[in-house]
Image (cartoon, rainbow, N blue to C red):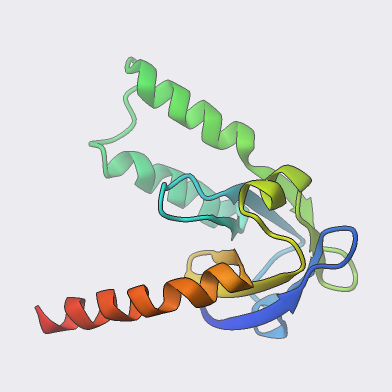
Length: 145
């Protein structure tokens, strides 16, 4: 599974997100959602169970691997697992984003869903549009170096 593309969607009054058709075949009956923990990311991540576990492992691999004797590692792992919510995909291919996730990511009605390889990233549409210029510059700099 490798998710790509950007799709503008609207959350309904109950906070449900209708998954873009391009992603539906790659997602199982359940997904894991979590507010993005990075400072510069004001969004919600949507993973399959397998990709969530792989992401969590990669978080610690970047720090030399999970060390169960390290208090910070234990706290971070507990927080990430505790904040991740398992959601059912309903018969209309929608997920109900938790209110706390929506509030943390400032998701109101208009959102953009971006395929980012192993996950979907759900942005407030205005935030996504505003950050595109700086991201484009970062991409240009990446390829120029």
